[in-house]
Image (cartoon, rainbow, N blue to C red; front, top):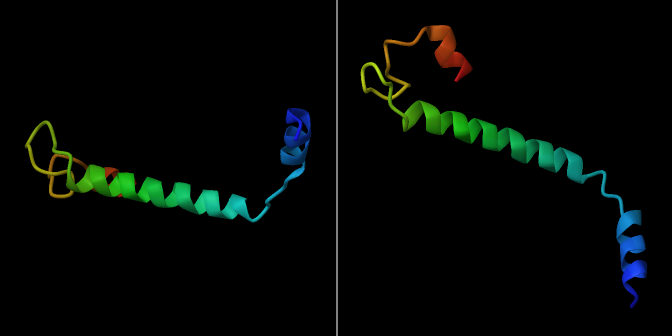
Length: 64
């Protein structure tokens, strides 16, 4: 096959069902990163995990 023919076939492909899949994967990864920040990272002030830190405001913990 010629390279130009391959690129023309690839450019014509459309997969609308992949958009929700990618959006879901990105959402899951954001939640996973939030979990890592809350459970594994420690506060600079009290050296407790962010989940158990009393230095942070409650609304800030909800954003994390």
